[in-house]
Amino acid sequence: MTIVEILDKSLNKITEIKNLYPLNENGMILRYSKELSDYGKCTFRIKSNDPIFTQFGDITEPHVYNVRIKRDGTTVWQGAIVDNSERTKSYIEVIAYQYLYYLDKALIKRSSNNPATNEADGLYRIFNSGTMSSAISTIITEVVAGFGANHPLASLTAGTIENPDYPAGFTDGTSALTGAWSFSSAVALQYDFHTVFYALRSFGIYTYSDFEVDSTLHFNFKKFLGNKLTNVTFQYGTRGNIVDYNAPRLGRRMVNDLWGIATDSLGKIYHIEQTDSVSMNTYGKLEDANAYADVKDNNFLRTRINNDLRYTKTPDDAPLNLLLNEKGYPLGQYDIGDIVSVVIKDNVIDINSRRRVVGITVNVHNTGRELTTVQTNKPRDEDLVA
Image 1 (cartoon, rainbow, N blue to C red):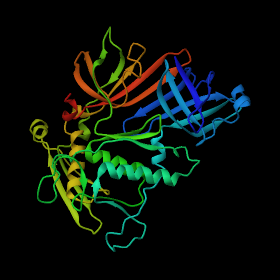
Image 2: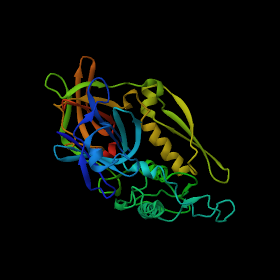
Image 3: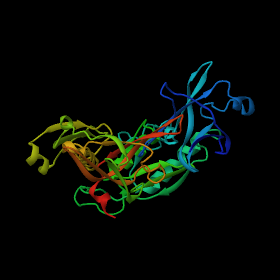
Image 4: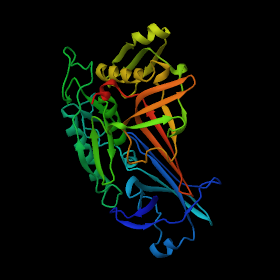
């Protein structure tokens, strides 16, 4: 059974919404989503004359109240109310986002000297010393201090902050860098008027790490967020739990010879080429070039190219989407970031592989039935190791 609760700023329960108003003519009354290292969304409607407004007041006010969704007693989604996108004589539509949303509404503190003038002009933030984990902890402390006492994330704290390792191919200009990440003059990241979310996401991209704000308002940054499940298999067939699926092969976006272009703050231009020889031998050469405005040196440019190439070198590197019904595992037995097994044997389509859950969307019908869409990506080989 799915329950929608309204919480106050201290995350204390105010009430349950017992009579959700339909979102459409099909009888869907609730939709919520989750994304890996991003913020999901929740949408529902309440009757405008629902007695809860008489009892508790205007408890759908944006940036004041929170939403928690429980399924059979387990919290499966939580976030802050951001919009009342419709308020009519019949219903009030409530839209809430998971808490990472607020880190996308906060600019990073610009406390570093301008690299061109060496003056503290409030334009730049440069990370060029210390570990990445210490930088992240500092960012979280700074952003909370700037929020103010009445902000929805005023009580946000750093939770589990793991220090990632250098990705393969990182150098200090002459020697390879391995082991735990440490910023230096040779390994620096620079931001100006970027959001905190943007900076944290770039940290994750460069180190293949994941992050979240959990339901207790702790910010977590981990080398791998989720579990490598061996007992969860989504299967298509007579006795399977997949209702439908979409397993595209996107050859049009394929690239196996990629040039990256970037420029640093002093105007120096960098060019790096990365190729995938296996793909080139199988499909022939498919070239492209990308410009990266946020990349300032060869190390980070190489990492970005490798990350992009990983998802474009074959037609089968595309996302695989699964539509599940009640026969599927309930959310809570698997979650965002988990690695699961997918088995589809349907005429010419033959898939039996490990996949990583990167997106989940749940639609709840007024009968209580659920339809869940699970988006999966091909995991990194390193993440398949137990």
